[in-house]
Length: 349
Image 1 (cartoon, helix red, strand yellow):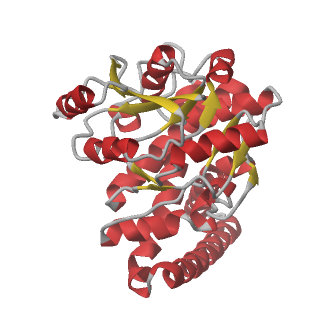
Image 2 (image 1 turned 180 degrees about the vertical axis):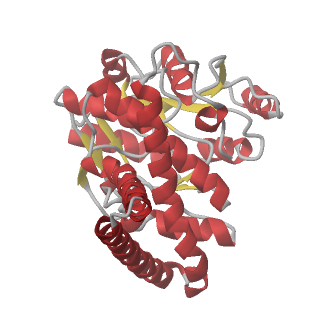
């Protein structure tokens, strides 16, 4: 029999942890032997008490203390305590098909890839979260990332959550605990740099629960952009050139605006006029792209979402771009500086 360890980092997830644990207990494991390790970041909202309640009913559920309180340290502690030959990652804000774990194991063995996973599909329950989910699957928000394509099957640069052989994770040294965000992308990049492969298949099904407000979405993608710079700084290269686009776009807009102001202020009207014209043209084209993206996303998810979709796409782009530019400044002069501010590290739900 194949033994599987399900590892779950969580912190202050009282509102979601029951659904998660019920989902694990209802999995069709198909003869797999399993255990579930909850790496709790010292929750204070009652999460630990709920997990303890399930542990009393099911001894295969265990809790691991995560004093580091971040995802990467929690994953590493859970993996260290794991006994299964295969490790499957789950998160509290995702709903899983009943055969999720079994399909992960099946495809890991079939493809002989270093990591497998399903597409990153979002499903919201409120008006705003449904609109965010619709935008989430659009190429306009994801830059054409295959991981956001629900029908793509094949090799990818990263997968949602993931399933690995425990020996692979041990050989890689686990997740980078210096990263508050993007630790999964960084691990995937290390797999690629060592000549490994990651495989995505729609046969592995889960539904991610997106943020429920524009402010939380903006904050989430600001953090993604900020910590992406740390990954690039570590490896001296991006995993994909699309990771650079939002920051370069925002930098370009800022540069054009400053050039226009400087041109008119210093009497260099030609420079000011050219800069202002290019800026206006760029923003006009961007607005047309937003309208097109909102129309196509609204056609799939409901026309009623169209008005808010026009606001959601910029949250992806400008949130990530602002975080990326902040990260460029922060990580460039990191030595001797204090740890990042709460805006870059605190929970965004």
